Amino acid sequence: MTGATEVADIAGVAAAIGDPSRARVLLALAGGSALPASALAAEAGVSASTVSGHLSRLLAAKLLTVERDGRHRYYRLATPEVATALEWLSRIAQPLPVRSLRQSTRAAALLRARFCYDHLAGRLGVAVMAALLDREVLTAELADSDDVVRYLVTPAGQVELAGFGVDLSSLARRRPTVRYCLDWAEQRPHLAGPLGGALAARLFELDWIRRGHSRRVVHVTDYGEAGLRDTFGITAD
Image 1: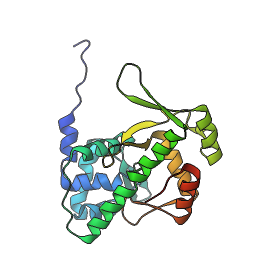
Image 2: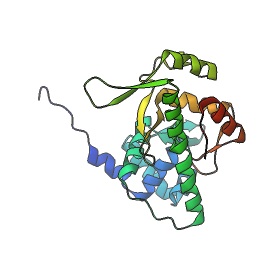
Image 3: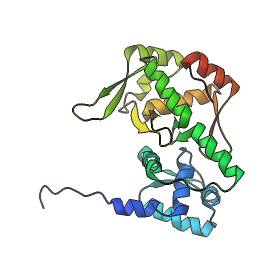
Image 4: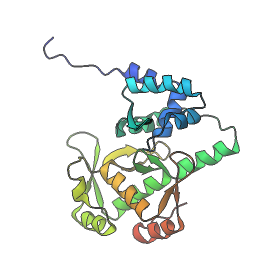
């Protein structure tokens, strides 16, 4: 029929996510890394044969992509929007019970600092976003007539970011430079989009942050604590 519009298959994608093992697979990949099936089976707590079926289901739902390196296969989230969807679902989901000290320690670390695809989230990610707004590196405005906040890099902010080693010209082809992403735990936005990814990459280059042993967890180094404080006025807790 002429003029008909497609209706999103929300039920289909929800069914793909809505299995505890598949949800754990997606969360393991929410830090942006590509992982082999063996690592994802361990994260999900299932056998290799079982995780194979789950991965096929997630690939069919276009939530994952697979990369081949010789005889090996590595899986990653299909798009940053999948990680964003997981963040939003976490806002309305009931918390899982914590049954061990290890789970408690990991949960606390995720709340403190973690990766949401390629950018920082948790208290650290929110603090970085707030600092850039306070320093007028970013400015916030309502987009057109919608009640949607749009973040823009100011001219002075471009200079400050360039001095920090983040070249915005390399991000010019990717819009918007800053994307709205509400942190599920803090209920405040953290820095997402190409700028969020580029800034996180720069913090890695400076050895201000390092990945933890647990998937997605980020740790601030001693250099990072001093650098974040002196550069952005951020105190990492």
